Amino acid sequence: MANTEARIDKWLWAARIFKTRTIAAAACKKGQVSMHGAQLKASRTIKAGDVVDVRKPPITYSFRVLQPIEKRVSAKLIPEILENVTAPDQYELLEMSKISGFVNRAKGTGRPTKKDRRSLEEFAGETPMFYADFDFDIDSDDTDTDETYE
Image (tube, rainbow, N blue to C red; front, top):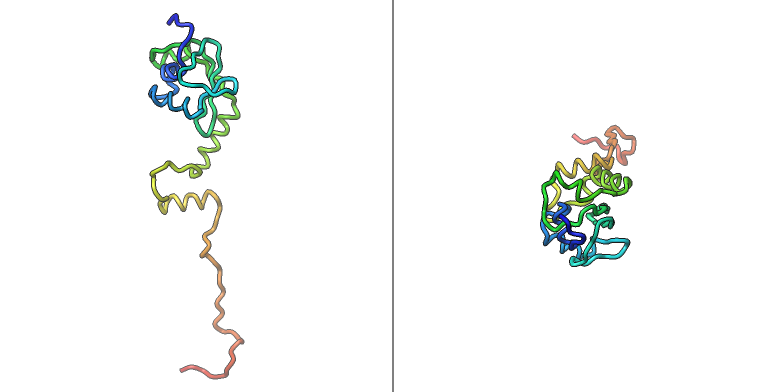
């Protein structure tokens, strides 16, 4: 672990930020990985002390590189590899999106079920459109004729 530099895609994978190196490289290509406001290519090298921003909607995580590694290590050693310097307001944003629940449905999950719809209406405090309190008064004085029906 005496490396002084490492590729960003390999480091993101080795630091367990992304599950595979292919996903890490794709995130770089999509512009989801940046440093000092500039988007990074997958081949960009990083060194100790760099702060890398990774956008995983709905929030942007920030990590300080402590050791630039290219070999994946156990999860117990991650605190020696990186320091999470994500702003607390980003975590509040994540919590708010978890509370709202139905804002971003996963692609391919299909239409919401009746239970999902009812939960959403209960959460939003909406009443169904078809509900109305009609007062049908049968003994009305509005009759046009004096005929009685037998």
